[in-house]
Image 1 (cartoon, rainbow, N blue to C red):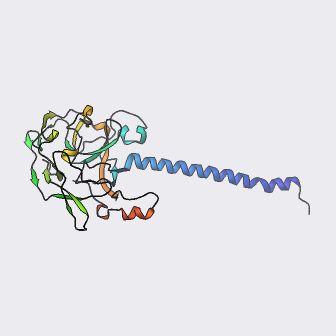
Image 2 (image 1 turned 45 degrees about the vertical axis):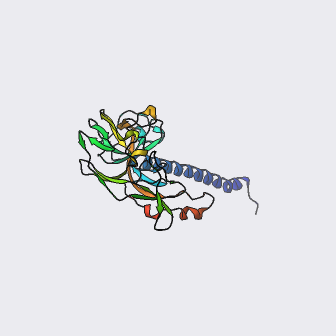
Image 3 (image 1 turned 90 degrees about the vertical axis):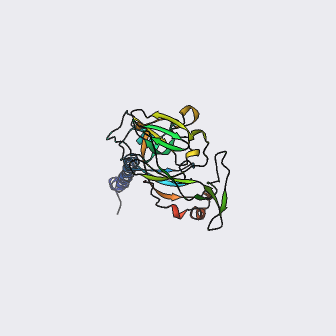
Length: 282
């Protein structure tokens, strides 16, 4: 039996329509996925990694963590590429003293520090001890902090401090730092390092925190370019609330820096399992 041209066209057309529907559905799914990722990263939680030792002992170089976006409201800094751009904060609220926050630094880079001073507070440092609103923040000496030396965590000290190492329980060298416990007036307590009593920022202020700004410090007090240093000197200066990205929550991964991208097995041998799920809340 012979087929007519009309019958051939009848059988040839549907696959073309199916292909168009399949392509449209694929791009629609991509758009939905991209929008969902944007909402998640902008409004709920975003990943962040620790590139320096300024927050030792709380955070280690190579920690990967989640940063929650909702606790302090939203500004343009909360969104990837600062889009959409706008001024001020939506649903804004002040961080608590002692919170560990991620913010956008003067050069547009993401930075993490601890909130010490709120708008209107008077901040000073005397001999390495924080003076908050005219009262010394209690500081208690703790057992030295021993950090395992690794590819991304050398035994870095600030002169005139001298590097001190000793073998750890696993035989690997550990770097030793003097450690203290600070307790803020609201009861928040955390550990800090103080390598030397004569560093530049061990004596600072007093100075008043302007409205709409925060005074932030790193827990590794002698090795942190924070609000004690002006922007022109490479520091953070006062940090505008509108530059706050979110609150540090917990670590979901941590690497000692020995991993290689071309060797997937090394991703796991470099994993610091004891750091997983580290809670950064004070």
